[in-house]
Every structure is written in structure tokens, then in C-alpha cells.
Image (tube, rainbow, N blue to C red):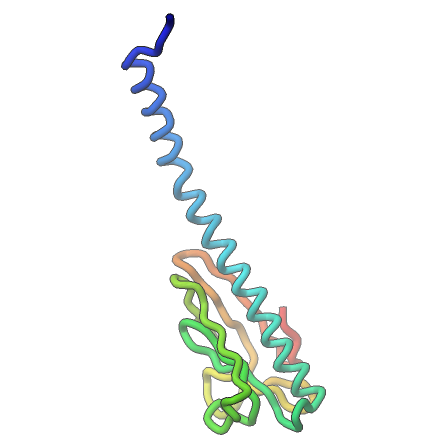
Length: 147
């Protein structure tokens, strides 16, 4: 009968540990990229939904997005403060993801974007979703288009 020696087993374990140490940061970055890209896609769809609801005159109201560091809210009304909160759709980001923004324009508050009946936003610029050093950027144009 042949068997592995203790030295051979230790060498194989050392190789596995070395490969794991090298690969772990790559897996972590891949995970952050996937999370930020997924959160970006979801947020783009919610922004487009707010715009489309305003364009369609859904419930004869304007619609908007309230940005927070850990999530955002799709709301119905001229501002977050005067909204009809029974129609709110609140989205929380996964733990570790953060929202930041640089928006120009006018509006009730610097952290909300309200679309008028023609689909134009009250604020435009960039919204960033980040996790550590990984980030995904959403561009909101003055015409209401999202990229």
C-alpha cells in the first residue's frame, strides 16, 4: 500500500493556502462589482419608472426619487415632504453599498429628483453607488434620459 507522507500533504496544503490568499481579493472585488452593477441597474429602472409615471400623468401626479445614503424612495407628489406616502416604494441597498450624488438644478430638496409632466427632472447630474473602491455611476441628463 502506498500513502502520502506528511511532508507531501503539508506541501499541498501550503500551495492551496497560497492560491487562496492570492485569489481572495479578486473574488471580493468581483462581488463588489456585481453588487454595485446590480444596484445601479435596479436604480436606473426606478428612475425611469418615476419619469414614465410623470409623463403618463399616473394618478394625475408628478413622481420622483428621494436619495438617501443607504437607499432611495420612489414617491408620488411634488416633493418628498408633501408626497402621498401610501404610494411610496422604498428600496434599501445591500449592506456595504452607499449612494452619493452631484446634482444640479432646482427643486424642493438637493437629495430628490422630481419629474414634471413632460418628463424633465428638477435635478440632473450623477448618482454614484459605491462599495469600498468599487463604484457605478448613473448619469441623469437634463432631458430626463438616464445612462
